[in-house]
Each structure stands twice: as structure tokens, then as C-alpha cells.
Image 1 (tube, rainbow, N blue to C red):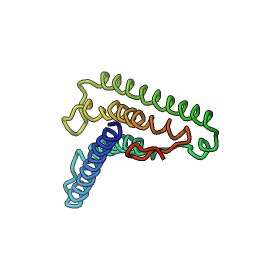
Image 2 (tube, helix red, strand yellow):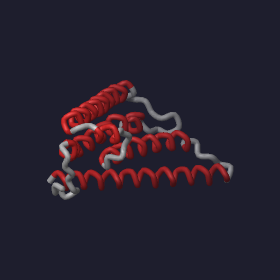
Image 3 (spheres, helix red, strand yellow):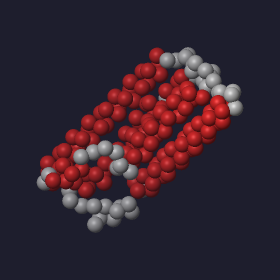
Image 4 (tube, rainbow, N blue to C red):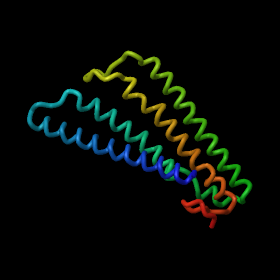
Amino acid sequence: MLARLHRAFERALEWIVIALLLLLALEVILGVVYRYLGNPIVWYDEIASVLLAWVTYYGAALAALKRAHIGVPGFVTTLSARPRLAAVLLGEACILTFFALLAWFGVRVLQMLAGDTLATVDLPVLVTQSVIPIGALLFIAAELLNLPETIHSCRGHRRTAAGVDL
């Protein structure tokens, strides 16, 4: 059950990141073509910045789900089982706390920006900046989906994607 949820979440994030990357690439190509033709798009830079932020946040959640984000596995693997588990749990607690705070403050920022729109497009800032709390919650979900496997591997076991112990 957890493996299926993990895979479905991974697929959804992959499609979102792919769509955002394609949208960003298309927007950049259009911006370059229009600028070359002497008729630059007014909203180009602002929308490109927003799309890049979205790719970053959603991509970070995907990296977390794939356990591909920054860490110090060399140090952790040198520890014996109990200290390794303690170090991993402390690290996970720090990560979860940071992203919970990021989500909470992201919501607070959205509340302060209510009613504002982008400078060049009549698009609410709530839409563009919603990536902060959403991305933080996606990162938390990714970490929590990986937590059982992480704990299991700290005890000296490895589990395949199908949930089989090695």
C-alpha cells in the first residue's frame, strides 16, 4: 500500500515538474523570438521568474521523494546502528520542522499579500506565491513517505521498492 502511494506521488510530481519545465522552455523561446522581432513581451521576465521558482519547489519535493537531496550519508553510515538511527531521526526532525515552519510562514505571507497582483499581468500574487506552502507540504509528504524505509535501512536492512527485505 505504501509503495503504491509512494509511486503514485512520484509519478504525479514527475508530471508536474515536466509540465513546468516545458512551460518554462516555451515561455523562454517565445520571449526570445518576440524580442528578436523587436516586440518584447512585457510579462516575460516576471512569469519566467515565477515558473523557475515553481520548478525549484516542485523539483525539490521530487528530489526528496527520490532521496536525492543534500545529505551526509557517508558520516551516517559510519555510525553503529543505534547512533545511526538517532542521527537519522534527528535529521528528519530538523527537516520536518524547517518545512513545517516554511509552510506556516508561507501561508502567513499569502495572507499579507492578499489582493496584490503581479506588476505586468493581472494575476494574483496568491497564485504565484502559493508554491511556498504547497512546496513545503509536498516536501514533508515526501519525507514522511520515505521515513519507514529510512528507519528500516538504519537498522541494517534494505528494502526493495516492492517492500521486500534484503
